[in-house]
Length: 259
Image (cartoon, rainbow, N blue to C red; front, side):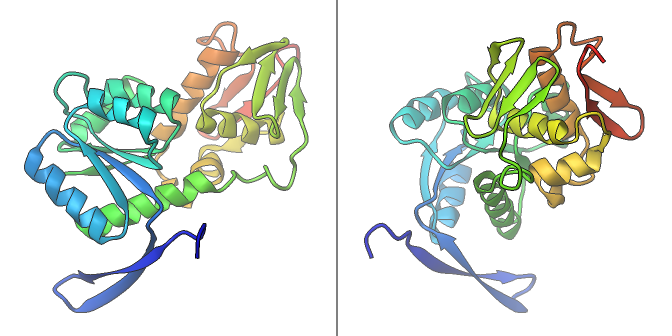
């Protein structure tokens, strides 16, 4: 039927062939694979296509960004160690260009730590060599999270104000003292979640569950990085925050700077 996403079954084995799992994948989903190793690129692209995804692959971040203008992906699989523009630099370009979720692919956990140290963030990561079932599960989870509104958006869609900070969920805008603030979708969702509980502490695990999904609980670095980004955008002095307050060993709370 025209207009209905095509879903196909993908059959794969788990373990030593002891169990067969049947997954259904929406073929309308476009995955952009950015990997400089030709063998790995062909292998992963083939596996994703067999799983039912529409796949486009590129060897460089520059080519991938150019392609994204013409054919925006629903998700980007981005290798960190790319020639020319590396994955760390490319991440911000992808976020500002298309706003699609990004999964980092790294051969070393050290690369991910470096990404967090440089205050870059992705929606998830997988380490090489990875199992196909793990990669497919991560892709499905990230796509699912990117399609659902964070907790609170449907139940309380009205505008929120905390001092001179105003959040309009319907228009997806944030202003501070009347000036528009440019936030990424994830930054907006995090700020909105804090605003729903203004004046009250929200734990890091609660923020992870409500903004990123329960599967992220136990990965506090994700929250730390995004809180730092928010402070740089809404605080007059980010190193001495008066809006987003840290409650040591508990979490964060949003307050009016005049309080």
